[in-house]
Length: 169
Image 1 (cartoon, rainbow, N blue to C red):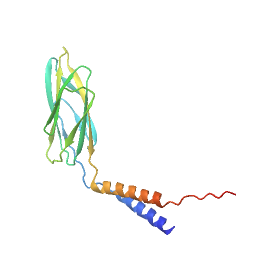
Image 2 (tube, rainbow, N blue to C red; image 1 turned 90 degrees about the vertical axis):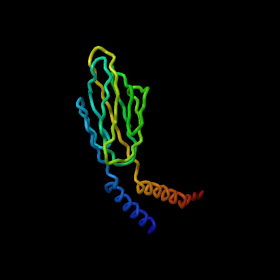
Image 3 (cartoon, rainbow, N blue to C red; image 1 turned 180 degrees about the horizontal axis):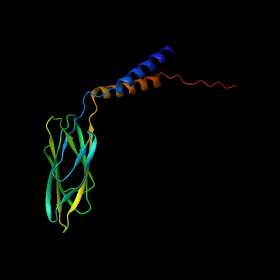
Image 4 (cartoon, rainbow, N blue to C red; image 1 turned 45 degrees about the vertical axis):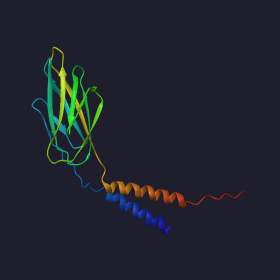
């Protein structure tokens, strides 16, 4: 019984430590183009109704400062515009489908990196597009260590569990 109390106390202490703030805080700055208002809080955001003039191709760049490693997920949607390309971190994607989610690896940097969106309007009216951004940081090594230790403790508990003995009367 004493071992169980020690195990519960250790698990409670480990749980309290995991609720502390992370050492790799993410600071995000979203600098908008003249045509759009961009919002991004470090984990999610985007922009709405960015206008593209009739019969033109528009290139718009948004500066994001991400100082933690991870993945940036981008989804662009529009009823009438064609998505020509997406660029981030030196990688350019072409031949894209609107509404799909595209993932870019993020290299930590204290200087802004440009997310560039190229949209084409073949219609005779101005139309807009929207985008959704999601940033998924890579977990810290301490979080991985705690998870693996938890699996080990659960496995140890299951291994040491005594089998129930059934007596037939």
